[in-house]
Length: 247
Image (cartoon, helix red, strand yellow):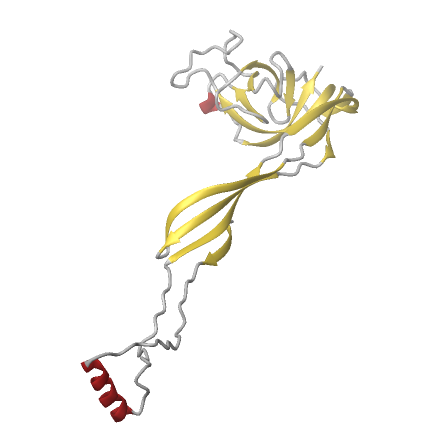
């Protein structure tokens, strides 16, 4: 938003009654006397018939141009809070940089712009506490692929909500091997290592247990790609699911 403070320069000459003594001589005296007799006006004054008024087409104004300064975010590790939990310790507030200009116009068109001042309000950073403490929990699982026969209890240290898709090693441009050098097969998982470290065993309900051994350009953040020998024969459909990181 641009704030404007306008000022118009106006020069005006108001009508005035002029009384000018005009010395007369010779024939002019006769002509003046005859004119005075006809009009009834004194012969030593001249009365102007027109007045003059002048307006300038220059104008100037001050404008303010504000620009937002985004706040930064700082994370602080909390060893007493469970991993995956976050708490805002300080709210972030955007700052603002305001440039003040003097703008001159001629017939409404800008002709000159001069920077008068720069005013800055610094942003306030956001501070977030991030838990790092590992707490082990038990998960009762059903009988499904990747697990021994019967129900069993798994121990996990972190639960995520992730968008899960499926893939195999036969896609165009694929070489059939993971980033870790192992074959792409059922139980292979492609992950974002900043979220799920490579080498981590992972349980996905409806799929079973896999191991994070691969990465992918399209796998970022809370995303996971579930490996199959032949994805055309797989049963997994892209969906949000719970993901459990195991011991």
